[in-house]
Length: 91
Image (cartoon, rainbow, N blue to C red; front, side):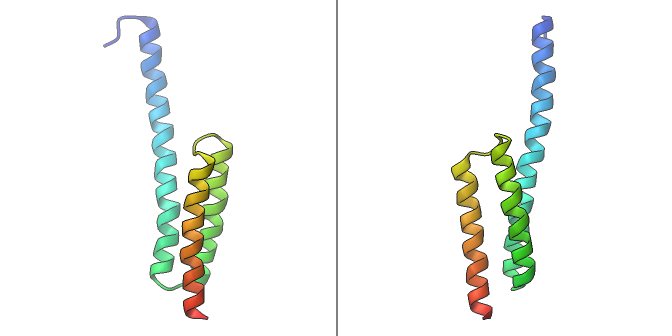
């Protein structure tokens, strides 16, 4: 274990940050998975609703500094393309 007060504090900070980062990583995976599953099940309305949530949340993570802007834009763009492709197939 740590021998200094500052090292103990750094351990506490690291644990907090690890938990926080785990939450955001899991959230990003889950919202993208929801869109992909809706597309896979050929449910356009469900896919569009999931895409709205994904777009909102990913851009919220950008504003909080969790995700780089271009990364979020790339993820949203790819999800949007898959939903658009599904809508074109159904129509």
